Length: 170
Image (cartoon, rainbow, N blue to C red; front, side, top):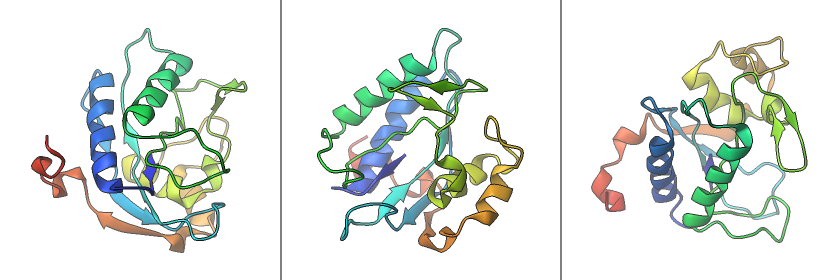
């Protein structure tokens, strides 16, 4: 997930709280990263990016989860975009859903650009450096090492525990 508009840290923490409610096991979160915008309009602010792993019920599908992710985005201020890759209060991307593969106008799994974006691979490597994206032969760690934009990603904090819940009213 990422945010580069408004109080990004608070938005990310609220999103993690909402995602925890969707997970049937304790949610796992990467460290928090500050990342320079990639393929965004000139002058776009830096992002805060985090990867989370959640375990959903067996009835959940990638499509039903996507609908829930979009509802969380909207509830936390996400507006319909008018410019490609413009600043946004929250962006929840579904990178993987087990070994599911999708290629529809609504959803592509695995995420089609995840394997070459350091702002995705770096937090994913925190969760599981040996993870292999569906259809990829290399691990997340190996893919990250090939990224040309790794220097655009820096650690903000080691976890959400670094931020007191009362900071966001929780």
